Image 1 (cartoon, rainbow, N blue to C red):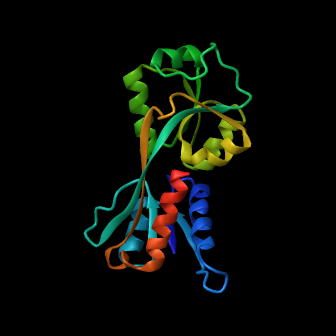
Image 2: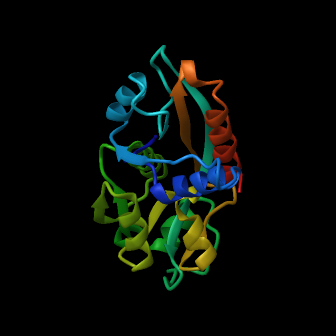
Length: 213
């Protein structure tokens, strides 16, 4: 039983689960149940062992729980493959280059909801780099943020892990330095008493492999 925080794009966890299941033959393949919910709710279920693992954007702080794996994902500027830049800059690194490319105060932005960690990190990046524009779409469903970028509603700063499939399908373009503008952290947590369980360890390795890829 795997819990996935509302802030985590479920499709990337599905890739983790796929790798995990493929490591087991059909006869020994475990059944995986995946549920989503707020971080606090999932951690409570994990503490009472109603869940075996949780994928979330926060480290485990409960003494009964442990952070089994952590990945740091580059956050890049994401736009539709059909989007036309306001300037000739293709890989903006400086804040000035971003402003020139997106149109300064005329920029249209797609943002996660205000209660998301990604939103607070994005807001801080905007303040530090004096970025402007108008938020035209805001959502607490990560998949809808990606879809709105593809549909050219606006641009967004998103972790590359959340748009892996769209990059392969070339429906989006990734702008900015290869290392991203900042790193977004995602954890795989489990109950301390389950940390040596072979299935949990296998899931942890699959989590690392999927994130690295």
